[in-house]
Length: 110
Image (tube, rainbow, N blue to C red; front, side, top):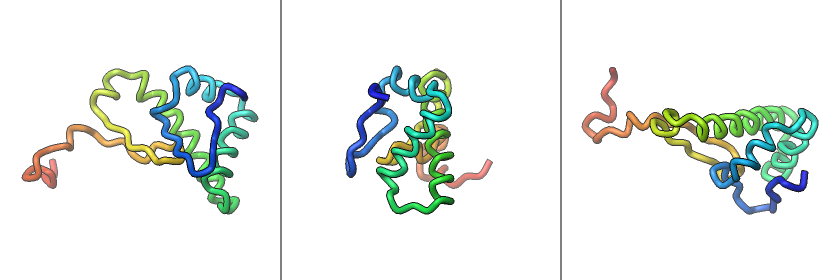
């Protein structure tokens, strides 16, 4: 997997910094190689995680890369939502830009 981003301990990995071609190659890896790639991320950024946490992290990484791909490739989604990232290569949250109201309307329930 030489085309993949090299991972260095303590260096942040932000999904928005990945080239589109790199993101696509990661998502199109066969299941074994994709598992190895995400396991490398987990071992790098979460070295002391137990088996259960590793399983949760694996799902979070896979889903984050899929969300990033969809976000980049769907114009309406990208124009209406904002992604927040972790420095360990995951999407932390997706916020609807509609809720960036003035403070007086911030807690209005519709």
